[in-house]
Figure 1 (tube, one colour):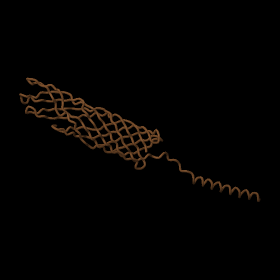
Figure 2: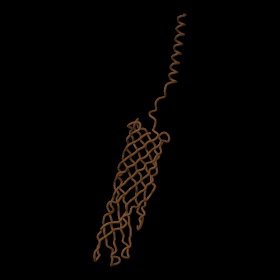
Figure 3: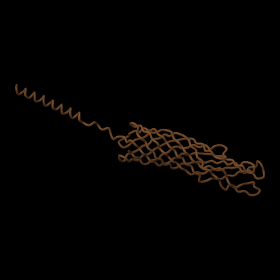
Length: 260
């Protein structure tokens, strides 16, 4: 009987000690890992293509031979290359705020049709046509963005953004023409065009998505798609009306990502 009592006491003490050790280990165990911390700052630099097509028209008048010479021009701005750079700053969780500056430049031609008054006869205009080549279009856009960054894996994240955009657009427009003419002046020949570089500002919108893949803690690569749009009015001296133009469009590209 005394032996059984001794064994019972020993088992009780051993069990209590085991439970105490397990409880202590549980209390001191580190919390489960939640994955790498989100970076505070996300910087991106990209190059890509803007495949949109933009059409513009302009019309100017110039007094000549006591009547008005009228010059109409149409312009088509095709696909071109863009470059941009921007930064996103984490506010809380996946919510970020940021700004991106984008530049798009493209050369285009202007197709010209004009009527030139006759030096001898009233209401007898002469028609002439030609092309103004090598005109320049430039769009400098500041995109302000509210973004939400989603973790799609250990090294992949997706940033979805939307916000307003400030457009500064410059465009070369035709303001007049030069012609050659000979007696009896019934016809003229187009020899050249005079142009002016005009600019306009406007506010538009932007929306996009950026997918990035981390190569290391601070460096990654990524691709983006973005759509932005605004309407601008170019004031032109001697124009019958201002020249209206769309600005922006769809963009797709990629580049480097930096994390801090």
